[in-house]
Figure 1: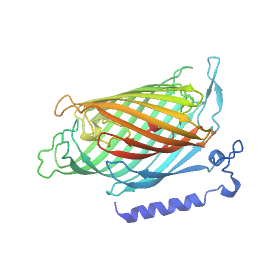
Figure 2: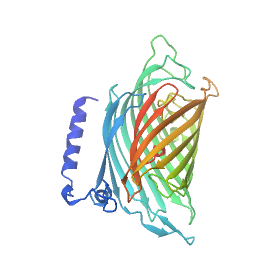
Figure 3: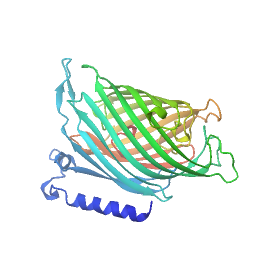
Figure 4: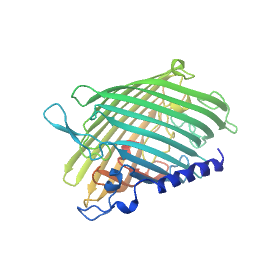
Length: 383
């Protein structure tokens, strides 16, 4: 995609932002409770958006940047509703977002999505669409190519749709989803032919599937939780019947636990497991998603990881974060298991929207091979 395309896209976007219906002069960015910078009032307006600069230091694609716009609407204040069990639950606002950016190695992306919290949080919707031109390295399953990865480019179009319904008055949700990824892939193997796990050096591939999901959610805040559980189990049937090229299944499960162990201290724990079977394309194999590890660096038929995070709010607005994790990718055939991968890091957060409980900040993470910086809006585990 030529640079002119991005100029034609970005200029109208900036014009739209500068001409939004609400005057900046009419909005206070100071919280009357503590006199500190806060975006709550701006986000509560009908045209209130949160501009988020994207700083990309992902080792898989290099340095880069972009911009994301998040628009909070609906029940912004987090209205309390009767939970049907003699208590109350807080209804989070719906959020729409648009993002675009690129990196020094030629990777470009643009996309948008919507998280809908409907009918007093009895229905949840997630939808998004995006396009990317990706330049990355392929390491094989379990990282079997080691120090000699194969460079590739991929033009990818992705679409996701999910709809979940609360089961009675419980904290359980059941739902269905659809996901499509359409790619044009080009590899540069040098002397390495054939490339393990790939059908050719250039090929098109489309994967599409329908998902069944069951989730459990008692978080006190969807954006930066301090208490509660968030769990989900997903089974996805991919195949020609849904518009894809190949038949395979994907399985996923995660559990996130948040607990305020003292007035200023919050502990978070995360466990995540993924698996695939059947004739899946290379990009559908699960990989370890951890701060400090390259995207797609450790792939396999199965992945398993665990992380812990400790937050200390040393003032009402500012919070320090420490985190660490362990993970491994497993290959049943055609590859090898990865080593036990360990990561660690530190970060800092600022309470940017007190009425949402939304924190934003930066993390510095160290993995077995690389260090990386991540800009965070909300929990790092929302990604």
